[in-house]
Each structure stands twice: as C-alpha cells, then as structure tokens.
Length: 223
Image (tube, rainbow, N blue to C red; front, side, top):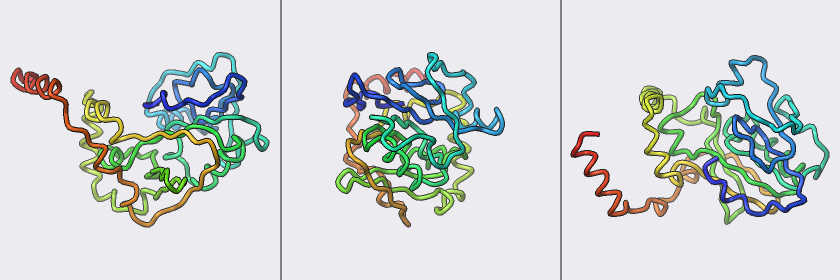
C-alpha cells in the first residue's frame, strides 16, 4: 500500500474486511478475504513473488473462488482493497460485491496505466482509474489494448526492477499509483480507449532544487 494516510474514516467500532492482503495485512482489518489458489506457485505470482507469509494475528481468513463474496449484505462497515482490482477477471462483479458487503465505505488502491506501460505484470489484467467527479471507477482490460506490442520494452523495465531500480516509481508515487477512500457506493464502467485512464499532467511536479543538486552530484560521481 502506497497511501495508507488516505484511510481516514475507519471508526473505532467498525468491522473491517480486507480483500487480498498479500504479505502485509492492514493492522485495522478484522477479517481477510483471500482467493483460493490451486497451487502455491500461483499464489506467489499473484503476490509479486514475495515468499513471506502474512501474519494475520489469529484473525479469520476466508477463502473464496473469485466470484460472489461469501458474506451477507452490509456485513462489514469498511473494506480495504489494495492492489487487487487490477488482478480480477470481472471488475463489475468485484466492485458490486465491495459495495454490497461494505455498505459503500472503504479504500481501494491500484497501479495506474503509466506503471503498467512500463512494467506490465502478467497477473495484472486491467488498467484502472477513478473519476471522482462522476463517482465511477473506469477500467479497460489489458488484452483489449495494444500493450502486447511493447512486451520487449516491458520485459526490459521488469529487469530494472529485479536489479533494484525502483526509485523512479517510488519517488513519484502519484504518477504511477492511485488510491481513494469512498463513503458511498460507486459505479464501475468499462472503457474502449485509454485516454480517460491516464493521470493528468498537473500531477507532474517540478523537481525541487535540492533534488536537482543531489542528482547532479550523483551523476558527477557516476553513482
């Protein structure tokens, strides 16, 4: 999770569901929903290859088949869903289930299309972007775009991640990731083009003088 500070409206008595907690369950979560993987290798791949097993602190973990959530309507007061929706086969069903079990309150986070066009992980199936003005989460399946034509470029940038060169995205999180807290149910809409999924150029901040100086020194030292 890149923006934990955006989770602001969880109340002390709220019952919190976390979907797909990966290796770092949120400490405020009360119940965890995990996909029932057929093999350990598939589970590791979905978690980005991280072998560390999560510590659920003895809290219940529920496994499901990826379709309807095994919970009653409004069984929870808040849902946390970080870096999951880009993996799902049916975003419409997934969002409807989030709204159904949460009463319309929670937090969702995901990589933006800018991140996917660099690295394009196979387990990520969708490009996603929230339109706050319309209260709608827009998406387009990656298979419906021409991203496959850039597979060699994506493979190159994936190799840079393996060598520890993740500072580009780590230093510019707002350009590559997005998270939003919702306090009412939101809609989901499949798009036919990627234009509405690209973050606005206004998010690009001018590099601060101190950063310019540090980078210049590192370049001079060839570090």
